[in-house]
Image (cartoon, rainbow, N blue to C red; front, side, top):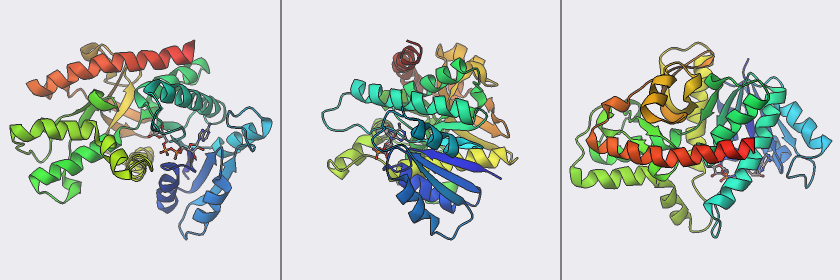
Length: 337
Ligand code: APR
């Protein structure tokens, strides 16, 4: 029996993500938590004739900071018995908001929610979607460490949207429409120049004309801007993010259930996962997204594919590491101050 929980289930990402979880044949129990509207979202989804039993839990009215006993009980009821917790809670970046504004709000939200996970489902796999992932994952790790329940093999920063974009955009060049056959490893972090698609490692291999390569890399790194612009003030990437979050969650669940050979890039705490120390030495950072083999207890092996990058990609990796260092430090400082 698998229990999945979505924290931030009423949002732009949370609702389609919850819909996908509701129709997944891999999930038996689904709990939704948000500070608003979860009873409505859960009631709506509960009419879908699929396997998962669904329940919605909401914070006390107006308790956005999770300070009341009623909110605590809702979190406890949602999280108890969870095998996997997916966190898209937070605020998306709105016009006029700086990255720091976004960081401060989402950092606090993730900290509070992971504190609840540490209390009520310390053994669950935790999948962080809330941005900036490069900082919110270190925050989650520090919270779990402080509570004495940190299992690095079960904490994942979801970077799958970068992989999905790379796999999609490369089709324009390769013409291969069967996406099951297309694999592009994307490594590093999950924002702008910290995202490094390794097109030289694409399978099947693709010959990308050099005059098109820079634009392709840029499109993967800043794909979110394309969506924000097209939505013209009405939001950011929510549907594709929900798909990507769900795809990663299904991989984690399949591996939990014993399926072999599942490999997905994800942003992990390197010193705590098998194979991670070598990558930590090579990069000088504690967190990095690399293809990870998943198993019943989470990450079974992080694969060091940095050495296979070509010279252009190595330059991108150097750039990525500079940005990542600062992002990781901000997260650790926020959580430990
Ligand atoms: N606990 C639970 N849910 C919360 C909390 C909290 N403490 N704070 C906010 N939320 C909920 C909101 O009520 C809302 O329903 O999180 C949801 C966020 O939804 P949106 O505002 O629509 O934002 P969305 O586009 O889904 O993005 C959420 O994911 O990719 C990231 O950058 C994005 O960090 C942002 C997050």
